[in-house]
Amino acid sequence: MRTVTPIQTASPPSRDVEAAFTNWKWQQQNALTSVNDLVRTFPPLAGTPLLARISRRLGSRKLGLTPYYVNLIERDAHGLPRVDDPLWLQVVPTWTEDSNHALSYDGESENWELPHEIVTPICQHKYDNRVIIRAVNVCHAYCQFCYEALRTLETESDKGKFKKSDWAATLKYIADHPEIDEAILSGGEPLMHADPQLAGLLRDLRALRPDLIIRVHTRALTFNPYRITEALVAALRETRVTAVGVHVAHPREITAEFIAAVGKLRSAVPLLFANIALLAGINDSLPVMKELCLTLYRNGVLPHYLYQFMPFSPGDTQFSSDISRGIAIVSQMKRRISNMAVPEFVLPHKTGKFTVPLHLPGEAPQLESREGREFMNFRNWKGEPCVFPG
View 1 (cartoon, rainbow, N blue to C red):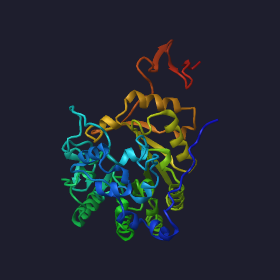
View 2 (cartoon, one colour):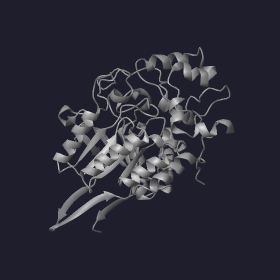
View 3 (cartoon, helix red, strand yellow):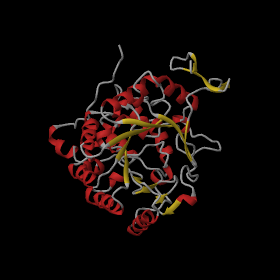
View 4 (cartoon, rainbow, N blue to C red):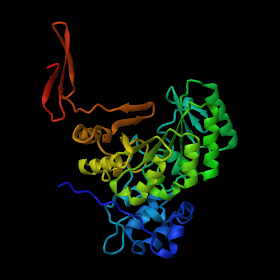
């Protein structure tokens, strides 16, 4: 029988604080943002080598854990976070040593933005028909492996912050380029804007063209699902937002609160999909990835992309998994579970995403011609050799 992790709930510690706990702004105001906050929440950490290591790793980088997310972290008998807890490992830099090679994170090298693509300080035009808008540089909590670490994790980021003048320039750029079909609000975390501000941004985009596709990317459902307020849902509905991309990494992040937030979004937005980073020790196994993707699909969120770990991201000694491992996981899922529950495995290269073929060396399909007809030799989902037609 398949073992499924029960859906958790991040219940507040007492009824007295329930109203505050479920307020998204309270969550942000009470987030753990320092080493001292960690010690107050996990007292046995005090004076440990682990705490010293965390302090060294943070350096000039941000820390952030909402009380909601803290409640999901599993502790050992001494009250310490479990050393292998997949939630703790994502948000607190616990790795023993930093890597030291040409692709290591150095606080300077850019992962994703090429200079000629930055058409305004907050707008990137990489692909022909869409732009991505960096609506904010902060997040509900901080993934210590962030692919946009230069924007989000660095306390002294050189990335430009959101300004009204840059927003006006971005709207003009989209209006002047009819080839743009889609505008994507990203960040950082665009839902860090309050409801009135975010609604204003969405209305401005919708006013450009009635047929403009508007997409919003967020990890709020993982870190602070209370962010999905009725006012936010109303704004998404009013401005006819086309799709919301949900960032998630592990089945234990899909709580009752996460699912409730999904339900609210589905009432207003036609498409919900998930982006998943492939992370060693977190989700780079078939059972975990299968459970994650099926749970998302079961609750109305289509697993869309599985991202290979990017170079120039913090913690590659902790999080980087082999490309061949990602291929093996996705290829084993293919046809064994519903195809809509299987993400596309991509390399997020600085020049653009590349879809990874799901075969290992020596297993690539071969096209050949015989007697004026084409035949494809391939291996089916069971690994059996086949030929089409045949």
